[in-house]
Length: 478
Image (cartoon, rainbow, N blue to C red; front, top):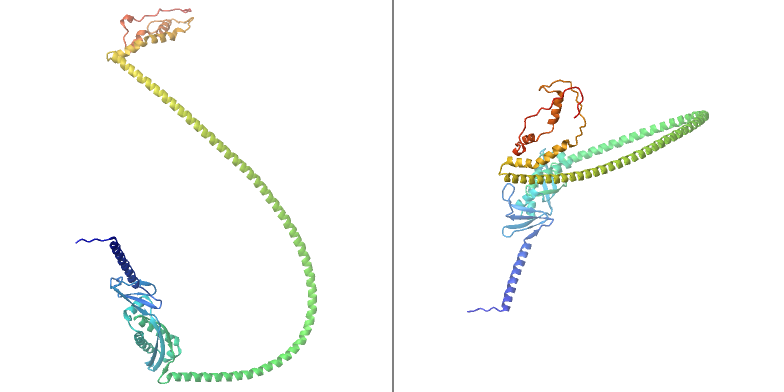
């Protein structure tokens, strides 16, 4: 059986496969979006299931989120909400035994709600999750009843009735501590009225009312008595004051007239004194002003002189500094030129010496090569090679010896001889002639100094001749 797929069949298959992939992707996105939960501001999102562990390694019971959002993993996690709406609880506490063993009725209203504090919110998730508001109210009411009975048992009727702030503070502190254990917080507490079955509180009120009425009556009577006495005293004081005022008025008029006269005289004296002081002060001030003006002018002139001197010194110093800098730069430039010139001359000298050294080296190398050839031609004997070199230079050596005395001009030699004999029995004159004759090195001695023997064809060395003895005190001419 053979299957043949047309182009249309392939296109249909591709379209179906694409549709399936798109459907799977859309389904995945829808599932992800459906499991992403946002927490409203008036609720707490409680995620339970596998939500991780605590710091000590224990499994967490739930994860609470107030505000924000979180992804809920399918299968392993679930979620619910805790409502943060406040709950009002009417607590009609009756027959609560006080510290004085007097039973009182304390009707009050409490407003509570689920707490958003981190630790307390975890308690709410563990103890109140899934419960209705009525059930939560019932639990809170039981806790409030117990705490209020406990607080009333520790307080007197007078404290409960008169010091309401202390009573409410104790109630709030104890009740909120217990409510936090189940995840609630106390928002407000309001005590409406406090009564007792024995009428103690009413009697306290009547006592306070009667005391207030009596105090008011006493206050009124004291006020009326004080008013009558005050009126009589005021009339008395008025009459005395009027008479005294009339008498004092006449005396005052007379004293006033005398005081006016004295005041006029004093005024005129003071005016004259003031005029004198003013005139003197004006003159003094004018003199001081003129003195200060002179002093200011002198200070200005000194300041101007200092300024001119400083300016002159600054000009001289600046010009000197500029000239010094100029000389330093010129010296540096000349030193640089000298250094460069010396470096060039040194380089030229070095190159010249290197060239001369290379020439001397080359000449010595050539001489060494020639000497090696000479030794080779002499049969390998270096002594024979040296003798050949000396024999080659013999003519030049002889010429140098002849040149040494060739231009010597001796017209006359005057010898003053005293006739004394030397160690060898010769006279002084003979010694002089013999020494002069020996000053020219003979050929045989030159051969001896060179380590060579005079060839036989040049003759043999003759015995030393003695110069003729010259005696006498007369001049001898040679």
